[in-house]
Length: 489
Image (cartoon, rainbow, N blue to C red; front, side):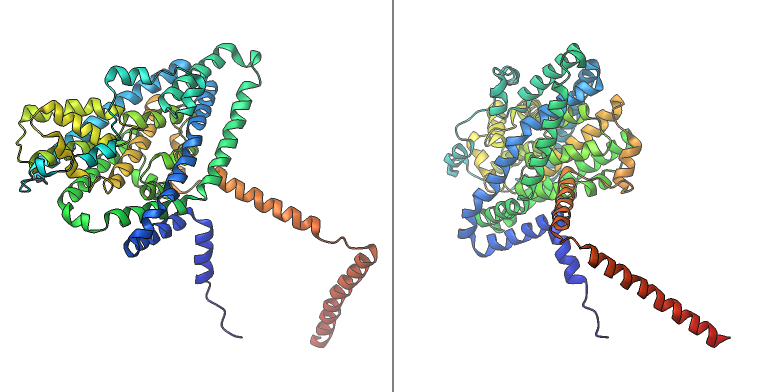
């Protein structure tokens, strides 16, 4: 017999066809190659990543609304929901403050900007204005007022998650107050809308590899790999500080819930790689919500804690802002005193809360911090223009993991976590099937059904012939067996 063909090519092809992780990983590598070899062509691929993120953003607000309303209605306890929100805010404040302090400590020890001796007057500040679009960070009062919706439809149209959360809480509270007898059709309708949205997510996620390819090609094409050499010390410091913070998150998750962060990271590896490629945590919010719910976290905890963390728990951004502020001061030769560094922490604790969704928010926060100190020229913020996009990967990973750990911790704190199911899911004892997997199964079943319908029906004569043939086929082995037995005797 000729040697059978190696199954390796078939396995590779099947993996690329069925695994989102493999598709995104290949797109990531291909984007780097294209950006390096053809930077001019790569710059024109920006719409690929932007278009994907726009599609995801269109479904985030209705998804959050449905999950929160259903979570409140099914939990049946509005007070418990309020406790979840309060505990989440406490966790967010502690975590983000810890991130700021780790960043300041790391920058003081390593001093990444020392010896640069940059003259601020030589820097082009117009690029910072172009990056921020002439915007500004809201004050505390503006931030609170902006979280209150002025229109039911407007909150969804502007994709304001905090406003959508408030509306969802009001609708959920109203459903609890009226009860299922007065409005029996509302909750099932919202649940069905939620299923439709998850189905849309599964369709959009099939475009994820294309988005990652375009975003990575643009990054390498615009900035190249040389910027890593210029800002190598700062980049390594930021990523090392992020690794330290993530290690502390792992310890906190283990102590509070007994779960492993590394197993959870393996569980969401597809979403993590997609977030890295697109430099956006919004691109994976729907999928991460699905996976957290499947891993034993209650709907109301997932629906409230995770979206709120996008505005209040920017751990990666806090690390970057504190390190970036001291880097700028060291680069221009300004020695910040201990009291001034405490001021940096206090200012960043306020400014970082209003960053979500504002273009160039990191530069706005850095400019506001520099202005509050009065010792650092505001134009020195332009020093970070060349490295800001590379820091996105660090910020995305840290922000996403910080928010997911917050969901598990607050859920456990409130008794809204099925710890045994979470352990089995992360250990792989329970295989999680998302809505997109179920969609693929339904499509396969439909194709099989169509194939069965197209199969020609056999006539009665054909059936009788087939039965006779089968009887003869059975009789022949029987006769052979008798002959063999007689020969043996």
